[in-house]
Length: 156
Image 1 (cartoon, one colour):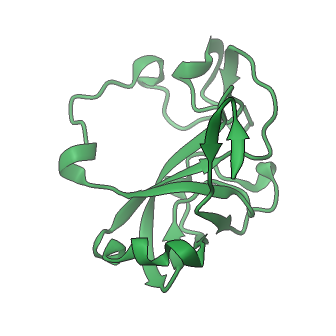
Image 2: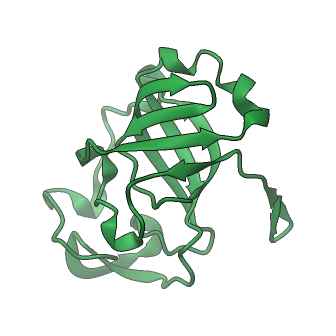
């Protein structure tokens, strides 16, 4: 277990992805069909029961290679600085990542997914099913991203 500011974070597994460093990771993983594996620790395998009935899952992970942050960030979407919490920059005071991925297959404690945007070895903190009736928000607004289209090819 890892203690962070009095909180105990216990990884439940690790990501096995084709991305060996941050520069390899795609912007917005949902655009990628590359296969990644989520290796859940065997002690938590029973908790995966019925997960294969879902087409997509939400993966919460720790940006273990990110250190430091700025409260104003220039993003790949434009050159105007935006508040950190209105961006998806991995450089955060509490570096949590959250991604919706497509679940391709399950083999015991290994989940095969596409759309993951994390480097190999990233600790997994939690997995939840994506439930369209609960998670989808048809009236959601895109804020400052409205009309931005695809981001330029640069890192945060």
